[in-house]
Length: 399
Ligand code: AMP
Ligand code: MG
Image 1 (spheres, protein in one colour):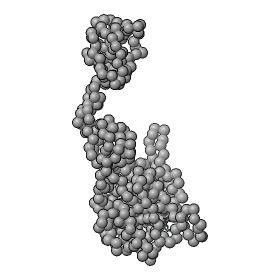
Image 2 (image 1 turned 90 degrees about the vertical axis):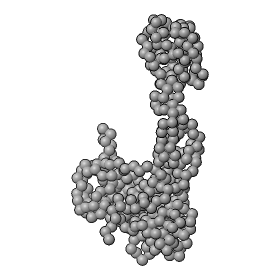
Image 3 (image 1 turned 180 degrees about the vertical axis):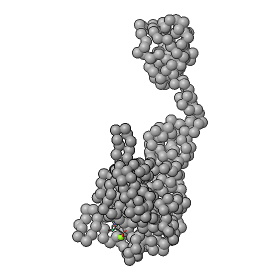
Image 4 (image 1 turned 60 degrees about the vertical axis):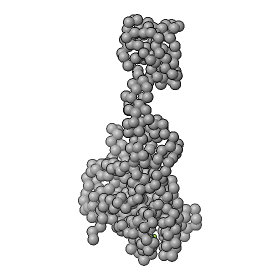
């Protein structure tokens, strides 16, 4: 059987995902969450003819008839109920945000008005509706403001608040278990022997998850021991929505993860993708619900597979509308020798005109994660052998 392409792997993951439950959050906690309901305008926006400048409100015809000389009949601040203009030779002192007084049709800003006691003089002709933000000119009551599937950032949270909602229905955050495997791994801060390796992947994965707004993350480490793996993975399958493992999915005698997962009732969806790095990635779904992403342990492979497959899958499980990754041009030619999709770390560069391109930052193989310092993510190049010229446009994935 030929290996899956990244696009095939991606669509298999998508087909096997279960949408996360809905929860209701107060707006102060909604930043970063994904909407699971449509948001409609509570009222017209603006809800009334809104004064857009501090100044005087008047009747434009009256101002012309009186050669711009008007009497100030009163004062109205934002939030005050509206005045009614007593007659066309009068005006009302008015503040930004106030409702336009009845029988007025224009506002002249304070800096264009000469005032002497109760008498003002407007020297320039006044156009009807100048400096008035007309009722309903932004949107109408009941119109769709935000569709389910929208991720809430600052403007969207403000829009929900503007629609009068104190709470909003969003996807619950997935409970994620990050599980590293390997006898050789030692926790940062603990003594290390020459033959041992720092347990860095779990920290990288957790950092990425937090950075992308996934906060409910537990962390565990399991030795390459069948009994321990069975016990710990069994526990995590019962307590989490998503398991992200690193290590133990290759061909070695102690790469026990696939075998243990299948024994625990996690059905294999695929093992291996035609890509470098990250070829041994394993994905399955448990009968009891959780999705299991078992990523290869080499640190570059782990982070690439996480950003390429796991983060988009988590977003989809939250109901977020899919977004095509941005495309960037490479700043130098890249040779791909293997007949596999190729992931190349890059730094994004912006030129004087704001155009973004990707500077290739090759690593010394999939173990060389120190070379990732300062990179922004990676690009996906089609299988080789091929030399992709400078300016070749590829999809970009952020760490
Ligand atoms: P594995 O996928 O378990 O065969 O591991 C491949 C390589 O990645 C080995 O050199 C491991 O030592 C290394 N590795 C596995 N897990 C981690 C981890 N959590 N942190 C750092 N390196 C790891
Ligand atoms: Mg291992």
